[in-house]
Each structure stands twice: as structure tokens, then as C-alpha cells.
Amino acid sequence: MAEAITVARPYAEAVFKLGVVNNSLAQWSKMLQLATEIAANDQVKLLIDNPVVSAKQLSEIFLEIGRSKFSSDACNLVIMLVENKRVLVLPQISQLFEQLKAQHEGVMEAKIVSAFPMESKQLKKLVDDLEQKFKHKIEAQVSVDPELIGGIKVEIGDEILDASVRGKLEVMAFALKS
Image 1 (cartoon, one colour):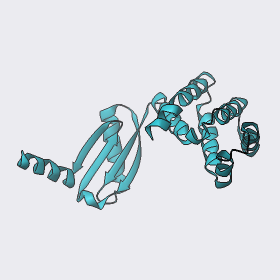
Image 2 (tube, one colour):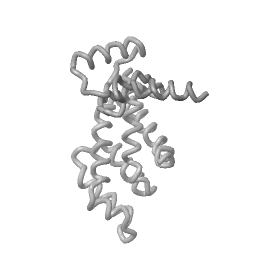
Image 3 (tube, rainbow, N blue to C red):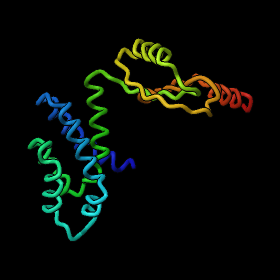
């Protein structure tokens, strides 16, 4: 799916720059989410793939669904995406936009995987420690994976902090094989 990300990046960056200039990042976030939901609708998907439906018709249908919630700039984006046959990359545009927005706001996203469910005090302490280490506000997405055996694994950007028993066993196994 790297190709979709590559196609989506210029759109996401343009929307982000427009949002910064107009101080409307939160508004754009909602509009992109809505546009993504509309494009994911089963009935709309049938229209997107239908060669009988013209770009103008698809744009009108798309905009009619979200008209009251789209700004004029968002309407122009939708029309451009439909005309360029890029509607299906809306999820990637939204995702990239959210990443740019988070960076702009000084927020980093952390994916925390724990072997066992974490108590709220443990999670708060971990997030506080990560915020001190990375000097950014951390937004944590927590999941449980019993295959870790014990401990946690944290992904922030391209950095991985593996404090799991499984990770340590893999390191030991590699060292023994060397």
C-alpha cells in the first residue's frame, strides 16, 4: 500500500498547509474523517467503481452527503480527488494529515503493547516517562499481546523500545547462535 501513501502525501501536505494558514486544523481533521467515511460507504464504493457514473455525478453525490459539514476548500478537494480518480486514497490522506497535525501540535503517537492489561496508574507513569524522554506530549494506543510473555513493547515513530520477555529471549537466542 506504499503507492497509495505516495499518492496521498501531496494532498495531505497541501491540506495541512491550508489548515495551518487558516488556523483550521481541527476542522480539516473532521472534514477528512467525514470524507473518508463517505468513501468507505458500500453504496458510494459501488458508484466510485462504476464507469457509467461520471466524475461530475460522483462529485455531486459525494458533496450532497457531506455538504453541510464541508467547507468550500473541502468541496474543492473532493471534486479534485474525484476528477483525478483519487477518492480511494482518502483514508491515507486523512492518516497522513493526522500525523502532520500531531507533529505540528508537538504530540507523538506511541503504540504500547503489554503482555497483560495495564492499570491506569501504570499507564500514566509510563506515558509520563515517555514524555520526559521524548520531550513531547504522548498519545498512547494500548493493546494486549499475551505472546510477549511479560513486559511491554513501545513504538514511537521509528523507534522501538522492547522490554518484553519475548524480546529478551529472541536476543538471547540470537546471541547463542552467533
